[in-house]
Image (cartoon, rainbow, N blue to C red):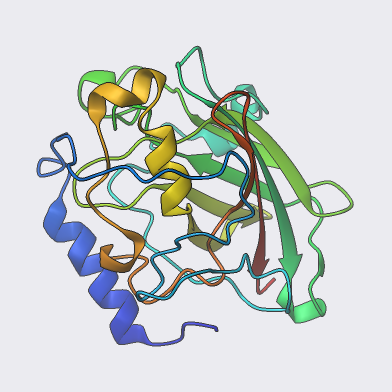
Length: 248
């Protein structure tokens, strides 16, 4: 479903603004950790308004929801720096490997692949920290861009995102055409997978994320076109896919 309510978007941005970078202190979540399969297609708990299940939006031609860029967007000008057009954005950050495959389509052309678009992603590390801010101000980990191929596809090698207080697990995405932003959105993750991941390795010390998709100020109205479809396990890592529709 296309989100067109300006009131809703304003409320989202206001909510993010009220948090502020200073208010996003890291805190370990609480609660039990359910046992989950080692492989998922995103059909587990989505936190979408309390309903189970969710889709990635690939079944129909739809514009992906417009979301806030949040408090931690790039401010170094990566879009204009070829060094940051890279598949591997980890810069040595530890975490469970995640191969993220995004397909960008043009809803104004019956969802034909959008070629030669620049796609930027950014996310926090396993402990909930973003590069370019705070004590990580001089670092650029877990940020980068790729240019879509003839199929509208970009692939990033990253780690499963951690979390910070007040937000559900997510990755930020911006799509640029001819240097102009045509979509700012976010990727949600199945809560059962996140719960399992957060019991392992470098994530365990930070604990569980207490904010579900349904209670998140960005995803509370649903994740039907933002929920990543995942396959893999905590033994070898995950592959995540999502189709993002833009009006270009």
